[in-house]
Image (cartoon, rainbow, N blue to C red; front, side, top):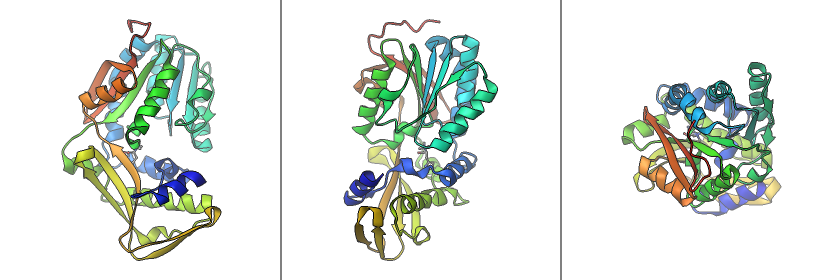
Length: 311
Ligand code: AVJ
């Protein structure tokens, strides 16, 4: 965290890594976000999983399901349920930065599926995918449009590592939010109850705690807007008044001028062709596309993969 925060705050625009939103309070706030009327993403993806999980699992027939950043296991259930119907699944590996979230996910699934082996991996999936104890064939689930948090070329590098994990037999199930009317996108990140604003400010609390910081979260405004040229939502925090920021653990001190901003998240929006291009850049090819409610699931595998993908 120290090195990422130091690098982010010296960059322009100033940035903080969005993976640190999710401490206990942040995870709670995010689960509140998923229930907001404006935040359609989670409901849309769940509906797609409900409708298509069986077909997807019948194609992929994995022995091992690896889920990157599952958070709460709400969506995982559809996959595990469908996989146990396909009769192939032996091992579930949630990969989570947050130990609490990893353990909660593992516990929830252990109750429902006593015969499934679960190996929770507390790790940053951008760095430690090589630690995944995969049994092949594997299905990697990367849901929630979390891929959208990574700007290119970071997204490309991540997908390449996922491709390596898939090997010649594996499949990737990727959730991506779709480009749509600006008003709909911006409302999803500017909810009327201000939950997203609190979620955004929570990042400063996490950084304060981790790095002996003195950010005053209440002194920042939440700013979220669609950036059409990059096809992405950006979230920023904007200082209402000048602040002298100190991060004790970094020996870092700087002045944030009034109106100065820190970018806390990018959330890319896609089209079918931009998803295909992103996958192709990592040597992956699309084998299934499921779209609805402004969201899409794509199933892909390595180009020239050994398996036909037939049930
Ligand atoms: C969980 C990262 C996909 O980008 O939409 C929700 C997080 N940020 N509201 C997203 C989020 C603001 C979310 N992801």
